[in-house]
Image 1: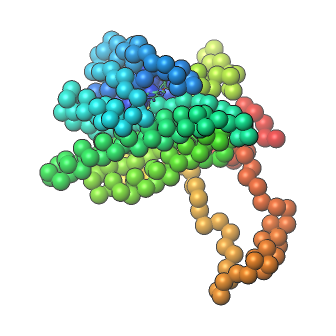
Image 2: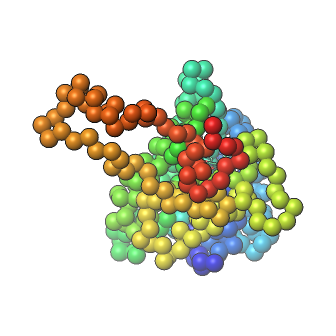
Length: 311
Ligand SMILES: NC(=O)c1ccc[n+]([C@@H]2O[C@H](COP(=O)([O-])OP(=O)(O)OC[C@H]3O[C@@H](n4cnc5c(N)ncnc54)[C@H](O)[C@@H]3O)[C@@H](O)[C@H]2O)c1
């Protein structure tokens, strides 16, 4: 296990599910953890401090150090207070795991403006806001001559990287988070910060209906959220300083370092295309058409597994 003692971490949405597992794993590796959770319903409504406080108690009972935080990560000022809490409690911040999330699934033709806005806010702005405040701290430390080895771990989704029907809001936010990762990784490298991203799969309240798979009575449980946390702890090790801007798909023990947008097919006309010539070339290159294969096919191709078969 990498030794993270002396490091201070924030995990957002850590009162339940995957975030809770990250907080427990980081604390077990020696990090002090700010356990952030608004304590909302799956749809994002309501607030309750008790999930964050329970995880703090679990960490303390196991001999670790932790503090609870109930800010909404989509509130820019609240995200600033979250980062400030880590600095006030322990004088530094080394690791930010952006994990908080909600769901409001709906087919595009029926999706309301509120369903779109709420999901984009919690996921996309909820990644930007804490990262922005943490980055200011790391830049200040780097400029003062400190050798920073900081980490941001973002949370995308198979829905964002492969595209899942019924999740235009969620999948667009999650694809945006993968794009945000690429840019933040390049911008923050100069300050000693790596920025990577997960596309996890785990049994939580978010997925229990989709997966409909309980934990096996014994042996390895591929949908235990702790499988995803092992990737987080590994990426937080000082030795992982040169690994940045990566999106990792995780299903049980299958971890794919994904290749996202790549050069693909080149249609090259040195003097520019006329529409009719381009159309002719497109039809010649794609005689059977070109359409996204969908999330399940993407997950199966990734070497991960899916409980649903490809359509
Ligand atoms: N479970 C999966 O298989 C899966 C798959 C792909 C992506 N994800 C992503 O993993 C992350 C964790 O999901 P989970 O499955 O553990 O779900 P979960 O519902 O169990 O946990 C999410 C937590 O985030 C908190 N939260 C919601 N909005 C918040 C806000 N504005 N500020 C602070 N906290 C907030 C909730 O209170 C909740 O405790 C999410 O980003 C989710 O989209 C999960």
